[in-house]
Image (cartoon, rainbow, N blue to C red):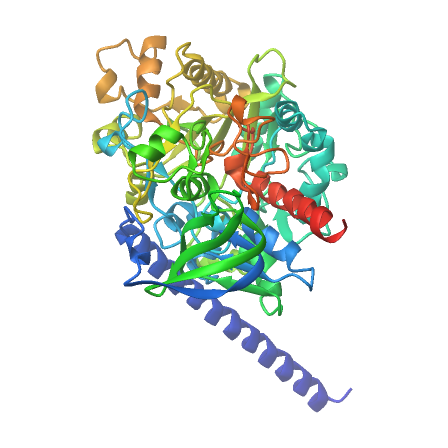
Length: 625
């Protein structure tokens, strides 16, 4: 090779390197601007208190068309239903969704999950003032962060893919007297949607319980952080297994499995609906708000759905079925506005009763205790924000996970039985106090000051109750469909104090973990001071922790059970095991509202499974029959 040819090759290589570097720099600049704009917008965002933005200025009902199936809500389960039902070319499918599709902008970064909740992708629900918990929350009201948009709560959740324990679903099978809900029978529906990418070889994964062929991406964050190993080794010292929590047993400590694709948030709208948006038989209406289902009073058959869009009112006629997939708050609200619900409640609001059912009477939610903050002697690595972004474009690093510590533990009611059904979970993270943390938790400043302080070289632990005994309610505020309903979860209200005792045991477990060799090696020390409302009690005594828990326990953002499955309406069931509303023809519910009991996992993950199973039932009934 001549010197001139060699020089040309070198110059061409340098040009390509410069071109690639220039493109990478431009992309990093774009992402940095996206984050700066997004974080500022979230800090300034004020959550809505009602849905009046959807109120029509023209109440004359216009006919929108006739469809085989009308899916109300394009969220976690609705997106799956839209995808599966639209596969049948002879069916016309309409999806009516209040929000919009993900713009794949700021919302793509899992690290900013708290910021994502302060956006148009969140309904902005709050509880009514609580009397037994959330007492340190501003106005004693807890936020219920549920997603609005095609993708639902998968747009704003912490991207944790967690199914729950097999016994959770075996219990559903018992409650419904239908073995098709047992874990061995629903596992295929979890696997059908999952596209698992085993990105961390150190993470235990049982591929018998996973699939690589679905649409919904699941992976680990890489690389791992030192807190992962500390947490996992501390659990080992206490006798807990290191496990795949989506495998044969949930109990033990695990490395998180995340709904991310190459490190970016994966939502169900993007995974299931966007690829088929051009299908001739699928119509997805965004920025559209359903106000009621029209049901014939004599035949009890669903005829149509009324909704508003761009200031006008429309009617969509349904030939086969209306499927409510509006979530644990939206679905019961629409049923009650349509005349299906507790007779006395509906009559008091002047709503004609079509079917007396216990809609909204069994609200349950995971209860989350704000967090315990500890200091350590470990100096956190000082990475530049540009370094974070450079890692992100490679699909790895801090921006691709919900936290630096990507570990989670599930613990049974009896801590001696390390393999039982989990009653609590504990997760850990770097503790950074910020304006967004306070906005997200919505505690009074005095409370945050007491148990957090200003120390940012800290580690936090959060304990969550997974199987609460306390039961709340969801009721209409009025018959105005644009008013948000009255959400009263009644956290920690069970008369036996079982729920608060389990959270107290969770706090004791955290302190046991803190005394293990792995945590002692980083000099872990509890940072908190007595919260103001509990100063009169001996600090760290059981009475103090009970008081503390009533102050800082808030929603775990997994409400369910407001339209529960059951074997009979006489036993409180709203839908049967085929998800058909009792006594009504042509209406089914397919979302977290149908859970007959809570799960030790993420409601988004389970809702996707419910969507898959319901789609299969509809195909069997209408297509293969």
